[in-house]
Image 1 (cartoon, rainbow, N blue to C red):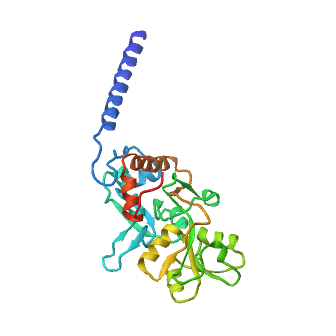
Image 2 (tube, rainbow, N blue to C red):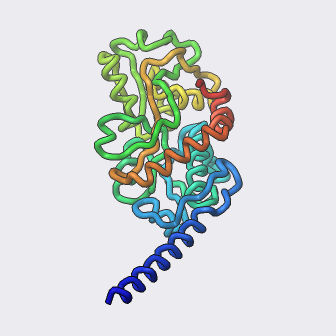
Length: 284
């Protein structure tokens, strides 16, 4: 019996060592090439969101379609482009080895969390500010963009800062955004009008329904670029750290996304994406 037991034990060790060798071979695949990123795709042995992405061979992302510079759909070509889209491509590259294996779905500030929670999308990359209240519903990646809230006004407007938003000032913004809560808190006597998205809010501003539009300055620069009759006021009155929202409790996918962001910053690709859309290099 002792000899038989030793033989079986030896056989078990051979099997285990063989399996370990195969696993090691799997993990030493060469790094993928291409833009953005050029990182090594993650292992196929994944669960949760990561497992679903690998299974369908596609990364389904919730993005904005109405925000110039971050996520804007060209009505002619139907193509959606922007800062957030390039970040999504980098994650697809990391997970699937191909930046084009993404499916973009339009979200608004109001619809994005419900769409994530019911499984319509794998992640939200849509200028979403990290807040403690939102952390109760979703998990966030590390900060991928730091913005601050400001105002878009007509070029001849007397409004220069939050100090000029007084009783009777009409401020337009998007439903469900932190911008609406912030302006009510810091200028409680103002009149806040909320629209379904920022495109509608901008249309309302141009039609004279508001005196100012408020959201993050990064988004306002995109609007001002679309219409030179408007300007962005100097300075900000909040800090708005953008994070990628992921289904609550999915630590594996949060780590994958954070690893991607770290690689982008380490290899210089993040700076290229930032300069491409914002027009300057990020502040260190």
